[in-house]
Image (cartoon, rainbow over all chains, first blue to last red; front, side, top):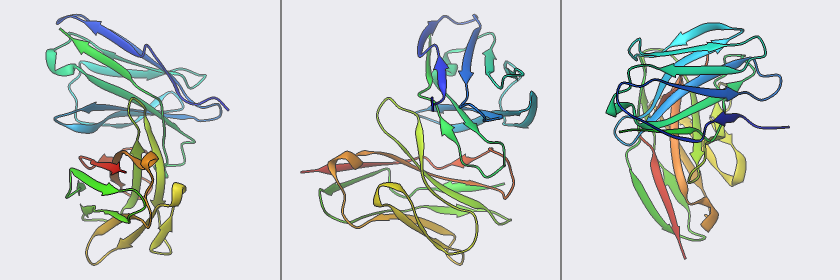
Length: 113
Length: 114
């Protein structure tokens, strides 16, 4: 069974640009969550999508958005990039049973110059 | 709201020695508890979880953790570590049925030395 796939794995952007990250969950998983990981703030929850609807949201500004498609694939977008957005963005999928058992991808490492 | 404190940022240990990684949490409601492991340049992998029932939870790779409600702790233990256990370990909590909005601790880097 294929794991969670995130693309791209690495990317470099400049301030003010926008970026879109993609996540393909494990087959059969209906929930996709996104986390930001930085050395200073650690792992922080961005949002969760279940059946194309946002089910939970963290405390991030509106520049961070996401969506989920009917095949459960998800994308997150960050607009007007800031230097502080440099981070590893992790996607995690689950069955959607609210148990908290997550299967993580390897992440997309974003560097903002 | 919940919070998680991992008291040790780094724990060095010799191979085949026992290890304990400490985790304390704060919550006004009951919680689910988790330990995740992150190997270099990889995502996180679930080691074990406590949802309810027995307070001693066994996970993968020989790890176990004990839920102590009175001390609000969920320490991770392994009786004999291997070089391959070198990784960063994260404790996390979520409210019951709270979806996948986990609150993570800051992580403990376990370094196993020969």
